[in-house]
Image (cartoon, rainbow, N blue to C red; front, side, top):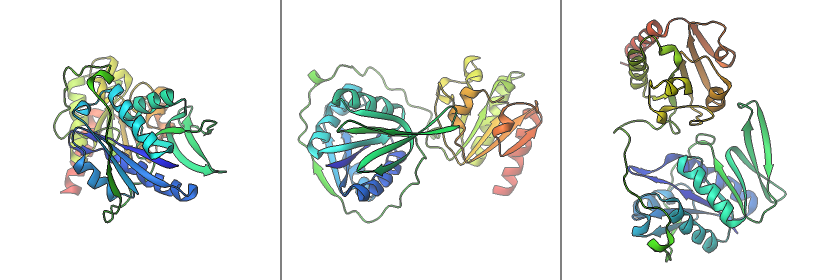
Length: 326
């Protein structure tokens, strides 16, 4: 019996939200009297495995193969199933990133396990995992319990604090991975990277988003959004309306049909506050709304609101931040 956490790797190293999950797994392991196993998969796992040792994993399993160069769902599912069997894992956790969500769902299906997606909390009751999901635009928290022997959950990034790295104490265990190209259903044709230095929406502590309110001059509107974001070290987000209108690519979309985020600060400029958008950002710690319509629903959820023209408010905010931040 163990808790297995998948440590996702990006081109620039391990994904930070994976270690948030490790920190929570460490807490759950105490309640279940078991150990935490971190699983690192890829064609090069050594560096990430060393980092994972410092975040509380008792064992770090490395699943290394040229077949795992680049993320292909069937390849990673094959590798993780072997790790789950080797670890005797009864709880399988990972961050609810784009890859994590589909990998967790695939593993649950293949293993006949119960699955709770995009959870915001985890606890143990009577020796079983209880997952907490936020539903109805973050208005209701629901408990999800499992009847299966293996319990799988993907965790919304930033639901748990990042643990402090300590001394490397966990054992690194290389798994003799039985995998070949014959086990893989997909062919990786091309990888297109995001802009260098671009902050990931799901990992961002601060986000500045633009909506349909930029319609007067979309290029200028999102230039102002981007300038404010760059000034305060934030990611750039957008509402579905702005994406559907072609103002900004889909990768920036926040909401029910985009990315679910939980930053410390969310600035919504020209976003009315449709329920689909609120579902994706309603868990933000501080919400600042900027809108010309004082009756816009976004103000009902905002901690701070500015009724005004974003073309005037955003430059003023940016200038003030530049003064204060030096």
